[in-house]
Image (cartoon, rainbow, N blue to C red; front, side, top):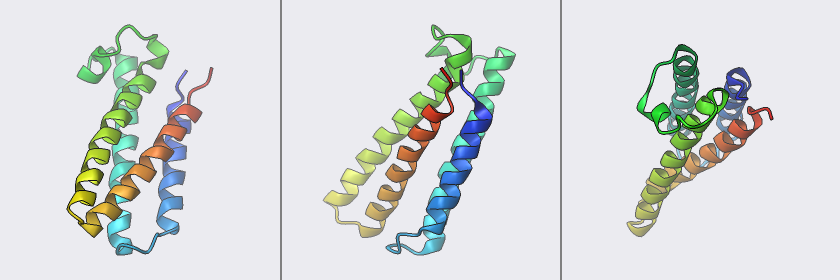
Length: 128
């Protein structure tokens, strides 16, 4: 079963940890904005998906996984979101490498690192 509160606590910890250990390759304000925006997405979507599951609201992301057990639907919806974002960010990162856009490469590295932490937080918030 997915524990939204544990997930949100872990996301906030990742957000704080990543912001306090700046890589120094970008302006710290830019790094902070990237990290904050990703954190806000997952904090918001965790609430939306759990509330939708509890109230029987069918978001498109939830109808894709309607065969999953009720208690795991929010988990799988967040996992699908994570996988889509990983694919999108990886493609953008590859294009940034091709075009030697240094700032975009650094932003992409931060995004991928954050999503790696999201994946661990998501799995850690699911009790078996």
